[in-house]
Length: 322
Image 1: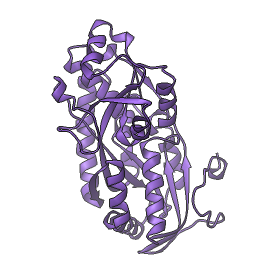
Image 2: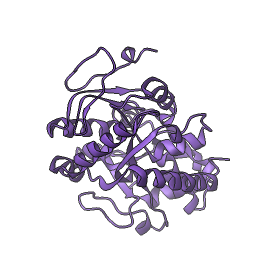
Image 3: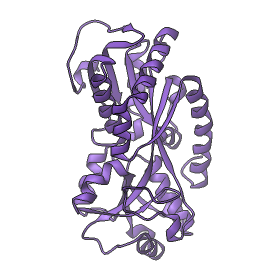
Image 4: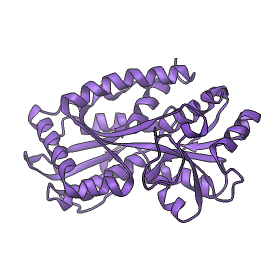
């Protein structure tokens, strides 16, 4: 499929013809941001906030955001690899969810095939229920889970991702078989939100940024957060204080295509380093309760290798990976 056939455009359109390249170490004339997920989720939010900040700071010229959703990024990832290989002006959002989806789906492609640029943020996960639900706390939810695991449906992102892992870890800590969890995977945050607001599922799991507006509007109720202690600005008790020893932090990052030059890789690392240092980015982190976890270049590459092994161990322990 030609890239322009599935391209969704945001911001200034810029040049459509030819292969855009880095203008200089400090600036990219025409930035491609590839989101391997449907609009509305955490990777999409990260891409759009990143795009806004980069343009506001004058670090890029024009930009485009392309969304290709499905299977925790494992549908979009091979497209990014094949269609953008060697292009030094392209970035793909991703993170812990994609690592889990690659392992769970036994994907033929993985993140060793792209170029790690920077880990950007971390976000604790929140468990929510529709406002009309009788469930008032995680203890209420766990009681239902113990009585009949199949009666509790969990809306979240891709199978094997951080949302799925948290549902499994909660079940495991409650001495319920994680494989008995009725987990409903959605391609994007917008679809999961529609299921929650339509009372089609018992509960939902995602980052606070995806739920905050609907919680504030009174349409959803947050009953637990996966942080080690309560988070300022989020009115939700931790999972631990409700009796289960569970904690989970979902990280998000950006990657460049394979086969880019060392010069282009350095320029992209510099670009994201400048973005991370900007007041606009720091304000965006505070607004969305995203933790700053910036790690760039070789350090991020080493972290990615180590965390992939850790996530594989978690998924194997939950019976979600071989």
